Amino acid sequence: MHMADALISPLVGGAMWAATAGLTAYGARKLKEKADDSMVPLMGVLGAFIFAVQMINFTIPGTGSSGHLGGGMILSILLGPCAAFLTMASVLTVQALFFADGGLLALGCNIFNLAFFPCFIAYPVIYRKIAGERPTRRRLAVGAVASSILALQMGALGVVLETLFSGISELPFSTFLFLMLSIHLAIGVVEGLVTAAVVTFVCKAHPEILEMAAVPRPPARPAMNNVLAGLLVVTVVTGGALSWFASANPDGLEWSMFHTSGKEALEAADQGPYALAARLQEKTAFLPDYGFRPVEQETATSGEGGAAAEAGKGKAEDWPDVSAGKSLSGLLGAAMTLLLAGLIGLGLRKSQQKR
Amino acid sequence: MEKTGSSLLDVTYLDTLSYQDTPVHRLDPRVKVLTTLLFIVCVVSFNKYELSALLPFVIYPVVLVALGNLPLGYLVKKVLLAAPFALLIGIFNPLLDRAVLIHLGSVEISGGWVSFASIMLRFVLTVSAALILVASTSFNAVCVALEKLGAPSAFTVQLLFLYRYIFVLADEAWRMVRARSLRSFGGRGMELKVSSLMIGQLLLRTLDRAQRIHRAMRCRGFDGEIRTVRRLRLGYRDLLFLVGCSALFLFMRLHDVPRWLGDTTMALMR
Image 1: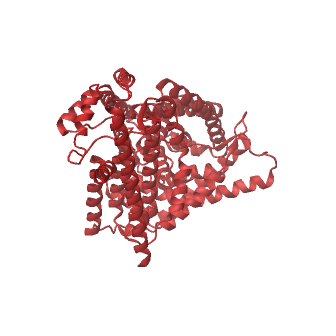
Image 2: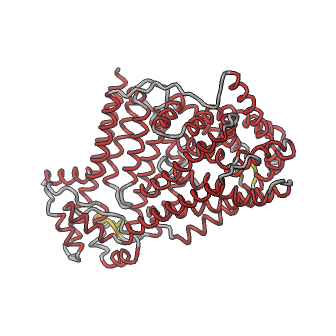
Image 3: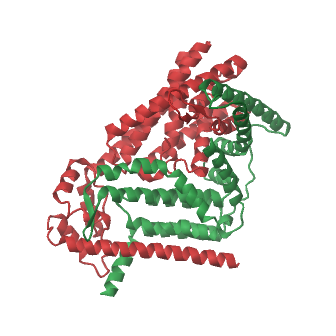
């Protein structure tokens, strides 16, 4: 469920980057306060462990396919929330850089979905509550399963919301939500079972390892929760409000850009009842403008900006040939651009090899 | 299993690529990180039906691949391997958005296909930019750059450690998996129970290793702080690259270059 750059808007990506940057700084500070220097190598090696574990695959019961462990929950149980968050963040960063699993701008979203939810929500709210102060093996297992399922559900919800606010994908909210939640319910159950099995195994072999993470309780838990809740609310509100604004008022935004810059700059005017109506009504007249917009007023086609504006008002009759011409020149320009780029690349490579 | 195994080999290959000596590799890592981020933000910030204005951005990966002596075929393969997610989400656009957007003579292209093509183009651009960053910059340098740019040192140290031990632990996991497959036939030993025990075993070994590493570090004077050797100097080439790329990206963001080229050519032909 790693999100890709191609599917998010800069606004959503930036907001989630800001949120995760804040969380990372918070986690790093908290870790420093603890001043336990054995944590440094432990976190690093456990991060690498998460990668290595993905090579040990297993058959998913009931189906023939095989799966592997995600890791956020098991890290939280072993390391505690802050250290687990930093470790997961580093794992996701390496995945984004080397495996192209999720993009760099989407890294904020991915860290939030796959590290924040298990470490800061599912772990303290579910796992610790169920496992309790003196955990028995049964309570450990139940806690691990329940928190893994919940963490993945919240992560899936995060993916859906971030995709929705970005407005690049056409997937309707309810369908996407249903698909993601049901798929991740199945994944969560399997992940929970494996996590529980590993945790109980460790508990049997080396019970002191689990106590290590559980005992040093940060006294400032309520304050932390407030900060996190605040961050969450701010992120959701800004992201939601801004993208609602951007998509609910496409005509206003377009109109103002047209008037300020003298050209018709287009924003994603794809959602909301107004845009739908406009799309149905002016299928041929208004929308060709989206594909290849008129930009340069000073070129030979300087009349087209005005023509486009007029056509937007409903003068559709002279449009088909204009749009065909526009498409043709667009295709021509696209081909020339790619050709130029390729030639520049070839030339540079040649000159590089000569040296 | 095969996928993860081969992709870990890929990490090794990317790592060797990043130690070449070319103009791109010599650039300051901070400059490369910033330029890559700016590139991605510019590419992603177009509206969802944009195609033509996105095309000129191809120039950035093309130039870096050419100057950085990076293997084009390998990068293309990596990008394609990562494509399924974007493909899976993007393919719904043509199904759901059927309003006709472009007329090419008698052929009509729906908005869904345009936005789908736009998604895939964005995907190729952003993923290749990220891959080029690590293929042209050693991971240590990326971490130092991140720290210099303000990332908390606990995080960058974590990245360095993780990267150092991925190979060690992957080897260990690989040996366990091989041992299991040598001793089991017809999918036995693949059950949840056995696998969980193996994971638990690996975890115990990992924890032991962490303890040994910690002791070794203490013996060498580790006091909770890791000091990376910093020898970053911003030269005029670096600044030139940063300013030049930023200006180029902004220009391409604000002006639809292919459209302008096409219009001019059409006007000349008339």
